[in-house]
Length: 540
Image (cartoon, rainbow, N blue to C red; front, side, top):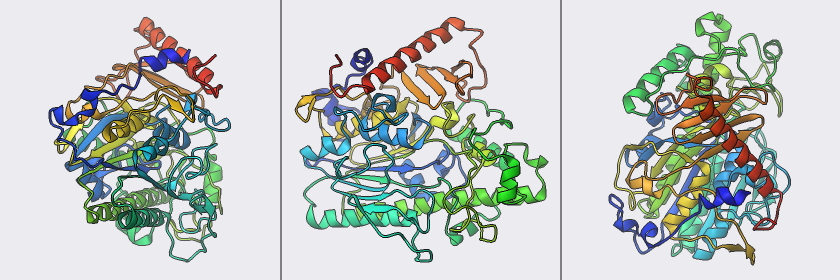
């Protein structure tokens, strides 16, 4: 039964947990409740940002990291919508019908604003939503204001977007609109309104970008900054990132070998890609020196656009931070930055298709990053978005809160998961989740607060972390991780203490340990699916 899993992860609040002033290295909270800014990137690789080893220029993220902390082992689900569901609810996506999506959230399931608003918070959302079955952030999610981008195929002229759950007119091509800027602008508008009309209240702002998700669309001036950066190829970029990550102390594992035969099963065949995009397309992460001149040129250009999208996001994050600082609230705002999954190896064409005559990166082009540079973006790990190996689920996690965290520039190796973000927010806000929702009993949140790790690394115990997306599977218990790629893929056993890149499969050497984890995964899988079937709690 799910109650077994839930009881051993029960969400405990007491005087000691809430009295952050008594925890070494954590400053006493001000009388005013802290604000929250939760920032989510889309398909950004673990090593893309400068503070995680990348060459992409991300000075605002780097600044948050320098004056805050970076978690090195925080996990997503490997895919957009289940990750966002975990983030907003504190439950695994399998517990709440979100992976695979099956109708609405259970009646007992709440989203972040449902906990925060009764305690005086104003709640705002801007950007991608993608919580299936709860499509209206205001009506379903409890947000006071929302700008929801529902068109994920057009960065310059989306056809489907909403303000406070009401549809907006389609954006005309050539209007000057760009989603990353628009998402930040709407966020800033909500914050300005808050400062003018609700300054006595704390705020919760969910800033959910849709970049650098495909299609690769970016402003030309941003692309130009990276025009020659990636001509050295994905092998050289990956090696350079790995060296920087080792020097920073982010990883201590080997650099995994590239996987030249791996791609998502739904990708277009390489012949089809070359026919529809051009001769420079490459469908696999083959050695860079085996590509011809056309392929090298196109692949380097695609990565330049990917980098430009991240660069622009960083600039827009800076504008949001500047607004919060202008309100006098930056020190008292807990900022968390994450990515919803690893970089994407997908190569598909949808939306308005691809115009071969259009400048690459413009609104009439349709490009995907592909396995080669996705491998580099996920350095040093294996696999990509949608897999539950480390490359698909490892997320950068930057936490910045000057009023509550003394540490500056430090790393935290304490494992965590997206389900832990909401409990962390609630503990910082001093909110104990009610045991009932809409007058009926509700289960305790599955995640665990990461607040103790703000002060002392390793202080948050994680008895297990569970993964299952499509037919990819995984479970982590302590430093042991069991991973499987695809429904027919065998279980692979790794000791992440010295092999986080999952290069040394110990399943045959330690079959009893592999079976222990496999049995635990199956038990949680069964419990979670049972839990998702019911709209009542406790289960009968």
